[in-house]
Length: 207
Length: 207
Image (cartoon, rainbow over all chains, first blue to last red; front, side, top):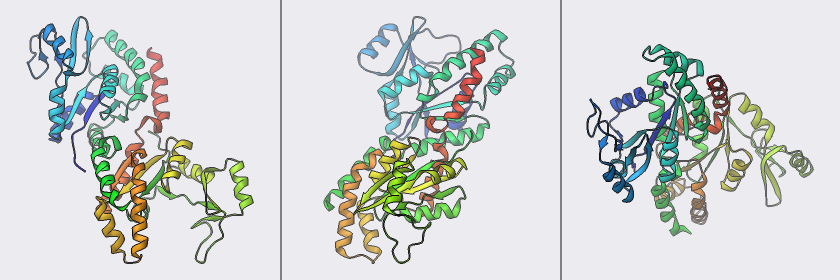
């Protein structure tokens, strides 16, 4: 089957190891590209244009919305954040899987705009393991950890709307499981529609 | 995640190699069991009770229907054929994946009765390869081959209602792809509902 890339949305609780999984996936395999968000917020020290974000003015952002140039967007604290459509489509057509690391509301919007996207939710094996990991970082206050766990409790309500739920217990195993999931997702009818249409067409002559 | 078995429905064009794939899968892995159909038709020479079918009277079959003892059933040429529920459930609870090799109408009925079943459609890489394989067997008349190809053309309309479409080009690769698909299907929310419910429950205390 011809392989166009897959738009892969990765969500998960804070502390589930999303960033580490995504980095390892990109280290191991060439066929992944990271989607870079567009934002109207001002760059902060250390921010690199085209790496962390594409920084644009509010006017330019609104023009991009009007031109249907974003797959999804949202406004937080007076700033726009969105996913530029053109970059995603170019990469998918080149056979790359494009990774979007976003939270559940954005994930749901992507699925509506792009039904053939693949939504993966990463989770630690248990809530106590999540708590242990957040505390183990040693970088956050008790208060921040408490807020993240509360947020995880809220987010868990949306787990069922993902295509696959993958447990991140051992990093390498988790990365392989995500990679195999994407490979096999190519066999779902929505994502091999061209192959199915071809074989139906070929079989017509026998009917 | 706790692993209950998966009810695996395998369909595909005549000539797609369903039987060979199923046999190889069972040879390689212990965790598969074959569902045995119940029928009201009379045994034919060579038929073995409990291997090819469970042979019962029409009355016994109708009693089993009335008791909700079948996952699905149909009547062909005056004989009943159906899938006994008890055997399937026992095997699934024991962690075995139960394989049902049935055609599309039965597959659709299974999915309705048992939404967590996994429907896989096997196909050769192309229609010309299908024709080549059917002719290559050298066991069927031109007329029978023509009928099978016509039937394949009809069946292809239903390919989209399967969960996964797997190409049988190389047997061993195909068997591995089916096996990996079943392993990963455990991560779909419908099939890891217990794990998801557990983690939601555990997280409640932080809310």
